[in-house]
Length: 220
Image 1 (tube, rainbow, N blue to C red):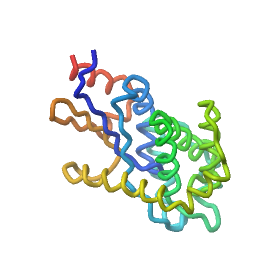
Image 2: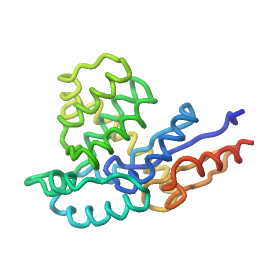
Image 3: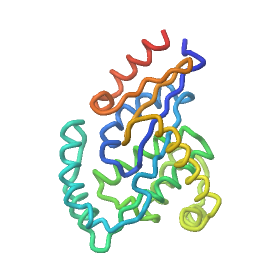
Image 4: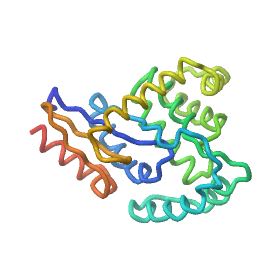
């Protein structure tokens, strides 16, 4: 039986490569503990910048990440996303989309994040572009058999002050939580009875099994 005090807070940024490394872990806990999981976007890559400014470092780092976590990484991602002329690097629209979907059903958030990561790193879709983010959200909603207005969603991503404020509030809440933690994402904060266990690094890059075992031991 799950402890009523159990909380699972996942700190991340949608464009964080190491967060991609922890995607299998996140999928596992989202499946086993959907009502206990809260996604905490950090805003790490919210501010737009030219993708050319980070392309070389990102590709080198992402290759290492994929090798450690055993995840796919396409050369098309390097060529069509990181090397795209005039490309912009920002997680702003992904975060807003995740928040918007979460208003409908919190369970959509981790599934959308996984879809966006696969779209970027494997299918070479530029997930900094709001039109691509809208298309991913549309697919997510279709698979959930939920209605979706693509035009309205696209408008909200770029021009809805309320959605922007909600996303900024989620980021601010994550930043408050991070003040008591070490810097950086991803992290999984497992809380029970007022005490927290912080898992990060290698502990969350090995899939869901080891983390689920830790949680099971904590609530036993």
